[in-house]
Length: 195
Image (cartoon, rainbow, N blue to C red; front, side, top):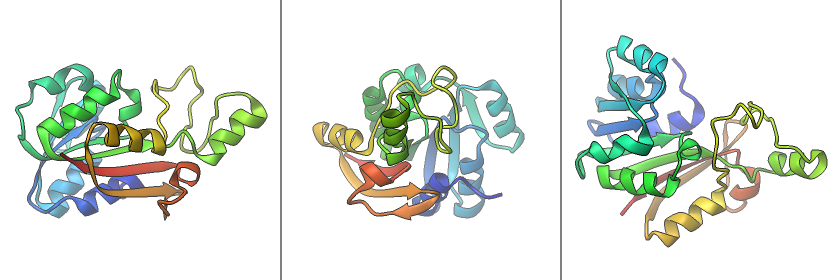
């Protein structure tokens, strides 16, 4: 099975044999890849009951829960990595979720769609409406996205909180793009963080 490009990047950078918590794990695709290809002890937290059932059917350890409320139940430094892929923008308080990830995991991977990508900007400028793009395929009233984060917003947040960026990768059309103009050119961002 082929992983989504941001998940493939994350999987390639998780150390073999690590203990991993995938928050918002969906159907468990990343967890299964980490278990099968990297020998990781992968656990998951997922809100959607159908995705929980799909992940459990794969033999994965996933519990139904809400990142906004249930991360507080995990002990400090209980995982090598806490992963939040394409979920940050759907949480009520992304800043607090980030703090929880870095409390639970020694390192945290965070990936998100970049709402400052040039196609998004162009759609707003010329059409005056919230964009529907390949990377943001739902209309504003259907999307689970409640916070419109940009690469520069995220960089400012981690700097403000004294969080170290250990690595960052930017994707456009599912291929890597440079860091210098990532706020304009990247559709998705992946950050590896630690305290």
